Image (tube, rainbow over all chains, first blue to last red; front, side, top):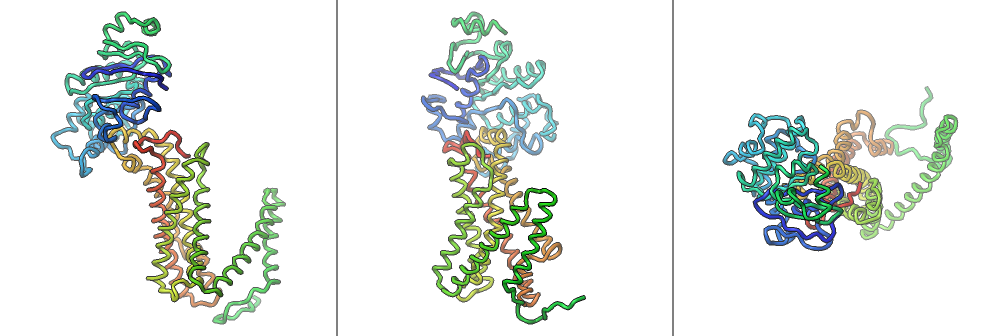
Length: 224
Length: 278
């Protein structure tokens, strides 16, 4: 639940939404690709209200990777082709221009994984497939909901390094929810701190982590 | 062996009221076993037997009146009443949880079931009436009422099974559906797998019925015709018309229910609605 939230999330950055459980981080994320609508107020993307975009077009521009990634039936390649097919008028997911390989590379999955049964992958592998699947849709922004929550710290750190490269390498802005503050400090360039549905502070990661203006944020960041 | 007091190729053997009373003794066997084994069903059997008698005798008089009146609009009225009852039954069977039980989801289910039965069962009946059997006059209640009853009974089960399964699949697959939506899928694309499962659940009994008909049991209508003195081969042809029509009607009805009902799970902005009927 969110209350009176006014926040701007900059383009070209990796933005981390941080805060204790129930702060409204995931709720905020879901508003951005219109999986939910606010009961009051407005959400704008790229200067336009999200409600003014055709919803499917918006969701392809603003990708979403869920905390618990759901694999579609079939192989890893089937999963990626499904996402490609949704963006083509004839609904056929041909692998034009090696989009599939490029997405596997971007998500740092070996290309040999394309033929693997997606339902048999480990949690970390699934999270990467979900990332690759979101990337083949060609988003300009990617929303990640606790992408490392279910992963070993080591696997999580690798995924975070992948994510941190997305703005520079693929011109994809990232907005991610995380409760791992070290992760937020290392991977993000911008941070929004929430608590109980309100934004307490937002700013460049270096500045906020270096010394937050809001006492509750300082306290929360120090708790990590 | 005692020779039955029944001669073949004669007309149907009458069932006078005293004979019916003798048949009712068989229900006492069920009541007796239920009481002896303490199944808690004795009363239900007894009340059920009385209800069955009252209901069927009432239907018998209604049909007698309907046949005698021989009016097309009366027949259509009777069919409409049957459709309404079937819609109500189909829509009340799936167990919906919480608010969904009375809310918009229930309304959507009644609408979806009604439309599906009207089209699925109604068009099947029209086809059988006008094209297959070429009933003259077209509104002959002797054909339309029993045929519609059979079609509705099966289509209604198909509709209820499809709706119930769709609701539970969408509950189960919430994450999967949202994963599709988040990639820019339409609600239809996002729920394709759930819809397939619902259709399969609804159609499997109809498909199985086709393969075992005549082997495991002789269908009721065919048995009835043979008992009524019809040639078994004619009875068989009628029964085949019936099983074919039931397959078509059930499939069409289930498909329409799934198409219409799944729309009720989404908002105008193609979001999975908060309260999913279960």
